[in-house]
Image 1 (cartoon, each protein chain N blue to C red):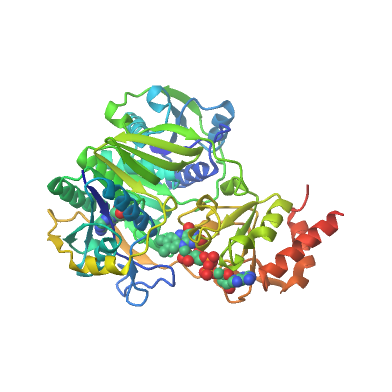
Image 2 (spheres, chains in turn red, blue):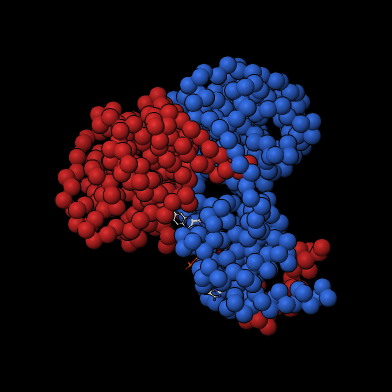
Length: 250
Length: 326
Ligand SMILES: Cc1cc2nc3c(=O)[nH]c(=O)nc-3n(C[C@H](O)[C@H](O)[C@H](O)COP(=O)(O)OP(=O)(O)OC[C@H]3O[C@@H](n4cnc5c(N)ncnc54)[C@H](O)[C@@H]3O)c2cc1C
Ligand SMILES: Nc1ncnc2c1ncn2[C@@H]1O[C@H](COP(=O)(O)O)[C@@H](O)[C@H]1O
């Protein structure tokens, strides 16, 4: 069996977020691009599981530059890469799920890993829609995933504690960061990744779209901070504040 | 009609974020000419939870019971929600933007073949129905049109304040046992381990949270912060840098990819206040930032601040608390 992991090229949003002039997208010209932390963990899990079975393939639906994210996943151990070449801004979650399903059906994977939510659009649904496209079970928000004897075991931090799911293959699992540490690419890994041919495909259908009217930036919050002091001398003022807020009582 | 999935806490009460979603539903109902708000809960609701939901203006509580709902399955819960929606012909199906709420709504939307909007903050026009939702971890907002029916969405945590209705709803309870296909029970929780008690406590409901970021310096840099946490009977929350570096476990993380907190007082120490962290703490009533950098976003957005090295300030605060307690 083989594993497919789905990654999305997104603007690195750890610094200031800037919008494109038409308000339709986040502008990545200055911030640069990345894949989200959830997907880095999904890639790590796919590589770990893939190394014990038939290997891991990475895929993305994105513009020409998204090859960068495919190479990043190849550099840490994915063995093959598929690129559905399309403008991701015009593909809504249902469209993306349909395109991933087409790749799965053509390539015959038995386990698909995705991130829990994409760092830009934050739709929280592609994995679940994919499961319905394929008619497979889906576990959502897993921190740990392992496969043995045709059964996927996934660990999820649930509202009442640590939950375990066991589902037979084929299956879809969406991954939340925190359960594994993504490995860093080695130099040989990077070299090897450059040579892997990337399987390019066209979308199978016209996208239905995203429903996006436009993006706006939230209004900046005015600063009204009251500085209580500098250094350890501020301690009495801090404890006065605790008393005033009633958090010191016991 | 509007159907809201309400999550119930272990003590049998509706979760605060679910009551926020019900409050949101009520304002939507008012804009739409007073369509009734019904809720779906899983399991038989307690008397006091029904009282609360009634006070929040709920017309009817649909309680899903039966073996299919004994352990969580996103597909089974969605099947249950959709069975309620079909009977009542609702035009909106919604939940709070919790992991469970989002998961079940995504199943509902996929099954119904309609779009879903995650983390909605507010709505604009009704026809077309346009919502504003958080994207990029709250760093940007998207206006999104939801044309299909039912309109399916989740409400971002703390987007609205939970408040009871001016006049209570009927609050009828209807116990239902919808049929659930075997296929919907394949991905189902098979066991749940109680979390070990630790200082992260119940972050999302803590009254006071002490925060720690890269400024802690190392895994050994938490001694004074942990002491402050104990002195204030608080919970410890950390930034992603802290969990990524392995200084503290991931379940203590606050932010877009961690817990969302809403304490009376949050004390972020050595945390810069990146938007993804802010996404998890912006609902704190008071923020006291402790940071060497007076220009750090956490400081400028805080209610109060102390400028300086946390390794000097926090021990001094601890000392002062002990001194006053005698
Ligand atoms: C998709 C995505 C999701 C993310 N999710 C999260 C999330 O859920 N939670 C989260 O926290 N982050 C998240 N991040 C990361 C986020 O962008 C920041 O990188 C992170 O929050 C920074 O952590 P920090 O404030 O501890 O570190 P830094 O940004 O490095 O800030 C350290 C701060 O400590 C101060 N400082 C240093 N030394 C001292 C000292 N001795 N005393 C006092 N102050 C000191 C500095 O002035 C600075 O302000 C996410 C990022 C992405 C891209
Ligand atoms: N354009 C895309 N290409 C590949 N995978 C994607 C794409 N968009 C979303 N995904 C996957 O689906 C997950 C959830 O995305 P979303 O539902 O959009 O928040 C992401 O973490 C990715 O793993």
